[in-house]
Length: 123
Image (tube, rainbow, N blue to C red; front, side):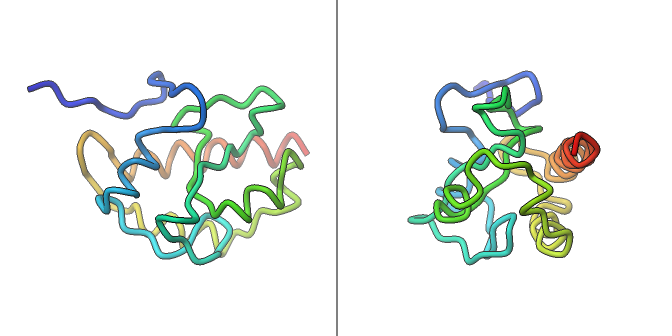
């Protein structure tokens, strides 16, 4: 049986992605979103760190889990206006050492930190 893996080069189309699917199935257990707000299966959505409207891709290196309210509030504004390093670090803690169905949490953390660093440098 072939297992689908999540990778930088495995984009999803639309606004669904295996990251969100794993969360909704309870395979990734997260209490708080990337911004530090309480996350539930009913409120979860995908947040593009580089907004989709500004060329951001729906790939693992550009996606975090966030509440619908957090996502809508930020809209397509620059990440630096909403980035909270403490909330982000708490978010990353959920993924440390996580290996589930082709998803490597440590690799995901590295990808997201690189994206954040690049976006904060852009201003």
